[in-house]
Length: 107
Image (cartoon, rainbow, N blue to C red; front, top):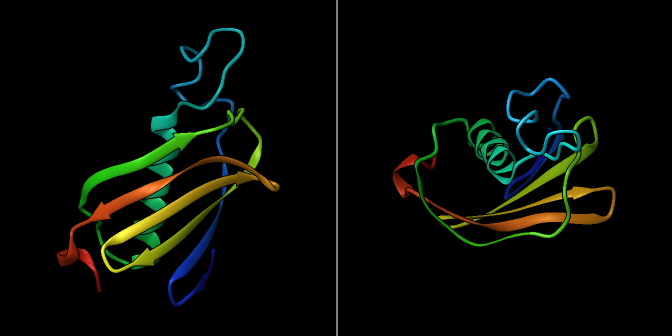
């Protein structure tokens, strides 16, 4: 994990053995969007050093699928109580959005 004061980059790789993959989709698994969002939230909590209370998600878009065992990167940018995120595989944008977080959780 690397960080500047208001930006953080985190490596992401979902194992073929992840429990959500057999049902999403049988024979041709892709990483579910909810799994990506969970990893974004975990990355934010690790970066901020505190539990993050998610208030809302907005402008969330999934542009391309992430396949099991593919390397990707989460980028987080904090602007007041808005946590903007993107997930990329190389230069290809896979997902992006904004998490509104509880201001009481910020350090």
